[in-house]
Amino acid sequence: MGEWYDNAIVYQVYPKSFKDSNGDGIGDLAGITEKLDYFTPLGVNTLWLNPIFKSPQVDNGYDVSDFYGIDPQLGTMHDFDTLVSEAHARGLRIVLDMVLNHTSDQHPWFQQALQGPQNPYYDYYIWANGHAGQRPNNWGSFFGGSVWTQHPQVKDRYYFHLFERRMPDLNWRNPLVRGEMIKVANFWADRGIDGLRLDAFIHLAKADLHQNYPTTGAGPVVAEGMFANLPAVQSYLAEFVAGIKADHPDLFILGEAASATVNLAADYTRPHADMADAVISFRYFPTEPHAARTAVPQNYQPQRLDWLGFKQVMTDWQQTLLAPRRLTLYWGNHDMARVATRVGSRRYPQRSAKSLATLMYLQRGIPVLYYGDELGLSNGTLASLAAFGDPTVTAFANAARAAGWSPERILENVNATHKLTARAPLPWSDGVGHGFSTVAPWLAVTQEGTPVADQMADADSVWHHYQALFQLKQQPLFTTGAWQLQDWAPWLYAYTRTTEHEQALILVNISDRKQTLTLPAAWQHPAASKLPVGSVARHTDSVTLGPWSSVVYMKKETTN
Ligand code: NOJ
Ligand code: CA
Image (cartoon, rainbow, N blue to C red):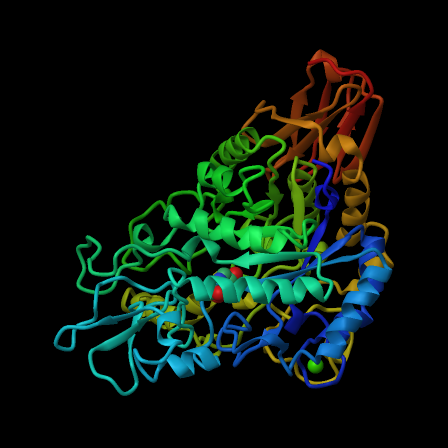
């Protein structure tokens, strides 16, 4: 304990969608600098920026062609230095997204590697031979299709890519690669950044490539057992972190550990072992099993959060990652549909946006807020399936069409579940361009929702709720206090936070109906109530919470 990031409240900036400063429709670094005064009043003290390095933008910056340069669409190195110094002048920290697992195919290393095994960079990547037109194995990519793509000139020679085919994986078995990535990280740390979000680090190690993964189908299969969370990941991580922390002991290492279970997360955050300081896992949000079996794949069909499962997951994580380990708290990011669409209530959008925020962020852990969630934004809409430019959408649409779905229904389902429609330009104000840009934005997503300016002027807005919430979150009770779920009713998400002298009880009605809770004796006379949302009616020994209403009770003496 005692690191600056124990009190971090992180805001995830999707740079291309935050603020366009030069009228080309693309958000940029100067735009972020222009808006730096937005964060302190909101209660945010740390910004995580999605990748800003030079990139052909096949995957919005996760395909890096130069780790030492800023993408020209986003600005210049001068803009970057200005952003860092202006942020620091306001007490804001900057966390950069570091892509370790792969590069762009346009990266000079890969261009050299294409020249063949004699080239020193060949071994920076992962190659294997096919057999008579067959790929080396049946492993599937996260972005659809095989992980293998054939060398453009050499038949039967393939390179490996877990993501898009223009994003070849680096070969972490090669010590030169590991050294290069440490060099990159230190370069940015020397330039003054405060932390790194490690993209996809759980995939750095791969199993022996000469094996298929068991499956019934003929096509490629996403074989996580072959390339996720293998033991070597931990030694790669330790070497990398040690290589940075030697000179930059305060750098915050936030690992993206998408499929990590709670026990793996405990390994990845092992204290005093040069591991990550915290990780983000995608396992926080179990969904309800789909009622009917259907021929239409589930990936673009909305699935409701399984609340019991979620309570269990939170309990597991809170109790396993006890201090000095740290947790992250988040509802969404650029890889999933927005929380308002996934979890929020259609009938009570405002209330559910506020109550979900209270529910999540007063728990023990570091809040990581996805830009726009402070406005309660839901997923926007793209006008056509083609606008997604995503082969997995095409596959879904084909299956849905074959099952008799109408084009409108297909588009509606994809809009409500896709990551792209969660990346819309931030609406700053009403009117043309929504204060984001003076021209049409890079992404033609139509976004509904009340803009920043209106919400800042309205004391009852979701924005103001976040402000009050983050202010409360700064109290030691909510950063270090012990967490315990109080599972008193299925419609309720309740927990206590406890320190030696203080206690809080957080009550959230997660249903669309009015509900009454009999309060335990210890909570019948709280000293104070905070952050009321919706309708909260106190009676002598009970409280009635309207649909999606919530409240925080505080008292001085501790009872358990
Ligand atoms: C995880 C990132 O969050 C995602 O957006 C990206 O596509 C992959 N890693 C590949 O870098
Ligand atoms: Ca711009």
